[in-house]
Length: 440
Image (tube, rainbow, N blue to C red; front, side, top):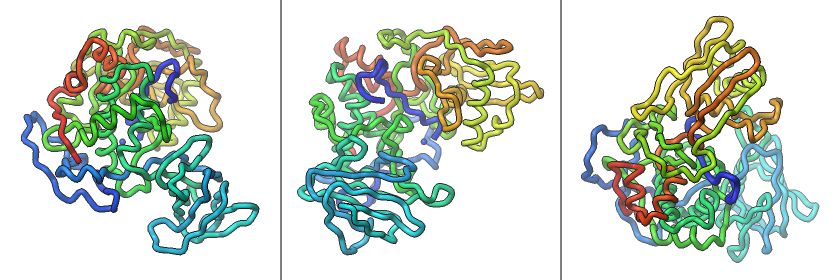
């Protein structure tokens, strides 16, 4: 979501899709630090990402950000020449005049420059610019290297473009997209620590992929290089600082506006951690300046809504793909703070489909070729709403918040910053029990 939209927010859709790994030289974070912190429940083993021993300030980890997914072709350009070589190999490189176009072939990638093409059998090419010049891709400038991957399996014949760059260079491009530029410096600093924590945790859980994070709200919005002074200053001031809990890096989720009621990570996301810093609680009226603090009604045509839910379910191999006409859609479970956690959909065949409330929201907003375009005014801002079903309509009213509601509320963080709260106080409010540590 671009900065300066009606709602900057910047929700993370982790319920749909969720490495302290490489330094500049590719070294692993080998040493682990055991932290003495209070804990009511240890994080489940599959998501336990231990905190690295503090490293040299010169070696923040490298982040791999997928900036273009599943594309038939891509054009890259720079003010300088472009250097192309197979990724990860000490192989001959080619210096080509900008721009270049890359397309998938049966056995590799075709690179075309100045009307002349060269076919590479490598399934991943690294592109850099001479003199460390930025590389432009689809109208955005990126520093570091761009790796172009030939996708495998069912989506073979398509390309992914992944930006490799140091963590501290990645984060300003996140803050620039996640927050309004006029917001308070303390809100920017709190966001920097949360975004760094989320990225580090996610890097460890995605080691088998060719990217760590998406550049969209599926993870954290990222807009490439930025001159945003507040974003740059916030990242520099918090360099290497992360949130931890029970010796583990905290996946510091955040969303635009909680509407006063937070959500549990375990309720929102399929593998969300059930730990105190990620439990939902009542947050009061801190985010009342959000235009989505209270919202509704949102009225959806029922057949269109059903088609969208089935398309979402087919994409995720979910039982809801066989849904027939919706008879009722009800909240059947709420978290300890009173926010909707689970819904049940009853169809005309008499079947009941249980679904997390957040998954229902994602399904309701699902976009894919072949579906009717969704009017922005018809998008479901959050799953916290009253729901009624008629013969032709589904009505959501008395809605609260924008996003999944887990962890930090960005509008609430801004209000607290304006009220004089420092970044550590803000983070302590939204992630109670977590501790800020220096990772590097």
